[in-house]
Image 1: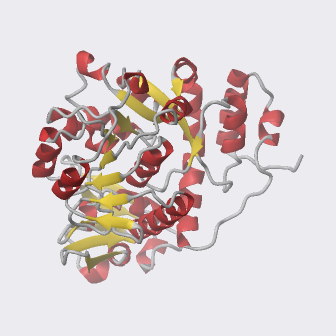
Image 2: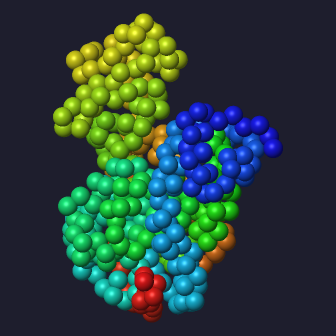
Amino acid sequence: MKSVEIEEKLFEELVNTSQVMNISVSQLVSMFADCVRLPPGESGLISYRQSLNETPMTWYHIRQNIREVLNGKPLKLLQDKAKSFPHLRPALVICNGPSLTKEKIELIKYSDFQHRGGVIFCVDSAAKRVLNSGIYPHFIVHLDNRIYAREFYKGVMKSHLNRRLNYIMPIDMHPEVVELCRGEKYWYNTACPDFPNMNKNAYLTFMFPEIPTLDSGGNVGTFTMMLANYLQCNPIAMVGFDLSMRGGTKPEDTENFYLDVLDSGGSPVFDDDGRVENIIWPCGTDKCPNEQCFKGECQWDKTKKDEDRMCVTELYGQYATVKDPFGNDRVVEKIYDMYIQILEQRVGYLKKLHPDLRFFNCSGEGLAYVDGMERCSLQEWFTEWSTKRLVRVPKQMVE
């Protein structure tokens, strides 16, 4: 077996995991890929750092969730059932981009799409708005395994409602979120690149052969689109799928700003309202162009002039304002560029496998419009597919 160096903290996690799994650490490590490599390009570097930072947390979550996973249902069970229903089953994926307006939610609520056999998927971050409106999707989909997913359900998880819902979750979901969601759970494993951690995919496939390993697509919207295809849905429409923010949005008000700060070597400091109050950069890092950083004196706050906060000026430089296909100003940053590239690749790949597969973006704004994805309004899409012969989602599909 090739020698693999493991950080002390990760080694402790492997020891604990191996004990639960009744397998030795050496056997555990031997299942992993024996190569550690970086993919080309900037997106590879982002994936590398995220995977490296999240590896110990991932194993801890899996260990905590073992009982739930073994008592739950593998997502493959849904796919096997879906294959037995050959009729047309369109799907609507509700995402939580700025374009998910109250008007669109009302349109979904009062349409007959769900009653005529359409399948509704809802990404986790949109769950609160969707459930509060009286829409009960067939599936709520999770991808990110961090604890802040609890906030997506705050104030709506009453017991009688909770147990009616069906959740699609990665097996490394944060245990507190797993505990919060009391309905039926369908489990999958998020495909992990071979870098920089050892190949989690091979190990988990060995331990849980019935649980499928799925490509994440980089973000929960793209993942849910691919998930709908995995469950034999066609056509697949997206709403609230922007992959950008509206023009004028400040970087610190975007969902990925804090990750960008951390990725650049800084530490955000929050005020009582949860906004970034200042950013502290570690001295000695080569990621900060400000000479004060090397002296341990680099601290940005709102009172400093632009020329005295080069760290943040560079960070803000990662954001740009562009026009979307509808002529609207949109704020986009590097992570969204990567998401759009991945979306285009995945749409092209799936359409190559299934030439009759159709994707629609009904958001009406944003940048998630790639080759192979048709564009129309949500009302137009409902009008078109309400005239088609649909098949109702069989009861056993969600039991």
